[in-house]
Length: 363
Image 1 (cartoon, rainbow, N blue to C red):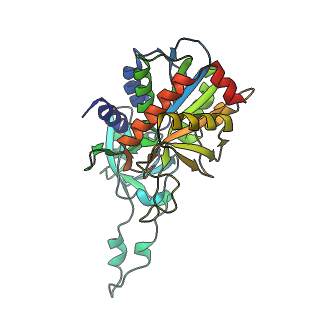
Image 2: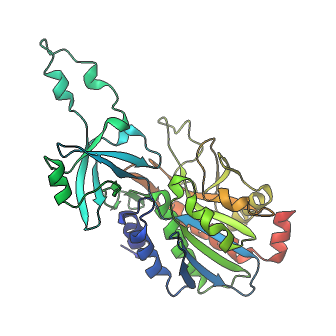
Image 3: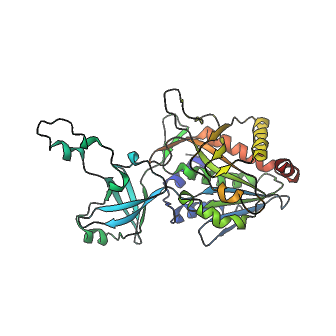
């Protein structure tokens, strides 16, 4: 396992639901401590500033530390736990999955449960399949089971209302050697890129100031980035993200983004239209260095670019994502070649972003 795989494993397996990103922050702070001026604001955002040969332009590179998770909502008398989602979940990926509850005293493992289909099937005298057994279970009807049989037993485990929880999943290198399976690639992949970018910049010249931000609570509406936006004071903002590569059929029909075909530029999301001058400038750089790029257009969701691009006077902003399958689940997949292509593109952008480039971008 090389340094990049080790970093991706460490970040993927770190636990960081919205509002409790400390584990992820500690991993990144250790990696960034000698790479720039490091600080953390009261919201929990981590910032690393590296000045190049010129103090301006100021380039904000933003990736979020949090992952979608859950929060303990109610502890029932029988020891089962009702929970609320933190971020967007597709309910069909939840049942039977293991979770880790983060309590004040430590970590408690549990499983997401609902009434078993057998409960309904044994009620059928003629053993015909019950429609009830195969109905979709709503998220609000699911429970977390930690093996307790009473509310008092749950309390003895240190679990209380308001405790967050995350998926429990290990990082794995898949059989082809270049595909990585793990949780929270949205956006631990971006966090890893932040660390790799700043590490590579130590031996490279860049005519600008890079302000790398690892933000909190993006999954709850870009809240961390809203708090950090003014402090970054950027001339340009680039969001380091993932891009959904969800193939709907055997030939990938229905998906704009494919794995193995390079990073994707977000043209549009629900909260932001990509700055056309910045997008075209980045497209030209990709062509110059031979990095294949894709384009992503989604009418839902958003990124940390939302609060940055509407700063006073406006900030040219673009989101660039590494293709990923199965976001917001226990088993996301990314590819090393896409990651390396994105890293090459980011470094080329930073090396070329000077005052003249900024004037071209602004038009």
